[in-house]
Image 1 (spheres, helix red, strand yellow):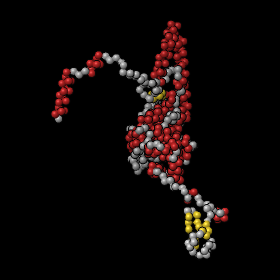
Image 2: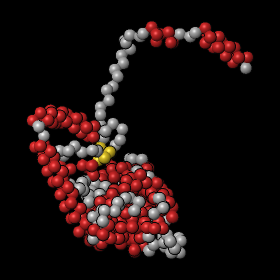
Image 3: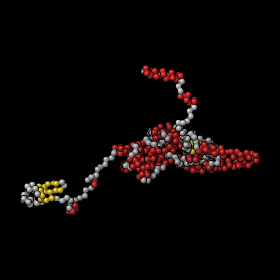
Image 4: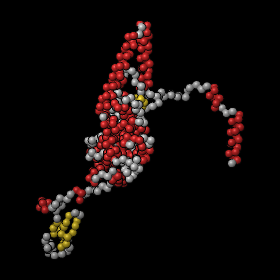
Length: 439
């Protein structure tokens, strides 16, 4: 920069900013002594440094109010289930990434709350934690069907490969929920969790061998198995207690078993039925009747010899079927020709009856799932233990015919007369109108 003006020689030179261009101007004569460059030089660029985007023009996006409330709710669920800090942070990050997806961005608050529970369930299944969908749904107060829909949508959107937890993974955590320790209940009713778990595991293995576990929800089956196991460990003192009383003794939250009580009772009856079938095969009983109210005393022996009793029960059942078939063939051969003709005519009529009975079984009118009486020719008659889909038939949907009302239908005289008021009705109507006006 020149210290003196070249025109007048004055030293009164000052800096003047004209728009974005720097200039040195003489105040005495007004001439421009020097001026800066509109752009930087190559030497200036090499000496400068890069400015990152977040320090220049980026605007920090704050999370919305619903997202913050979702974080609080998700962290509360993690602490209720006692997840580790690493798992909690993983659940929060998964919820944040899923919250901004188009599928969950403009939905109801209830669905967003269920989304947090599904993120927790995904992380627990990836870490092999024994947490079921029913447990998370109970904590959220949500329906299992809604939970399943959101969970499938979440795994499909983020392409999550989550493993499913089996029924054996849930038994330990479920057994420890019952407060049946010696210091919590009476000595007659108390039971250690480990002993109860061992008996429940044996009952679940027996249920798996006899098709009770197939296609069933795990929680009602575990609840029924815990009840049967608790009774079998001290049957003489505990047989008088019902399932509801047992849940109250164990101080289980009522909401966790009240909804599935009917289903759990069905699983209890199925377990007792299997135990009765195997108990009748014990050789030292010598034909003693084994019923639901007495089989609890035999559970220990049945579980100890489970494999042998299963083979013996199936073998005896098949032998009984063969004996019945041979007796039927013998009686048919001994009959007269006329009687054989009658039997042929009656046999020709039975398929129609059987088909009608089978149709009623396949489409029950009033119940969703009923234990159907299988026809004699059904393949299930040859097996002692059957899957639930064979024994119970679900109600099929029937299209209800809709009434077509056009307004041009004929109206009978009796219907028209029913719309016309009688003399007594007219008097009552006028009296009511008069009283209303006076009031």
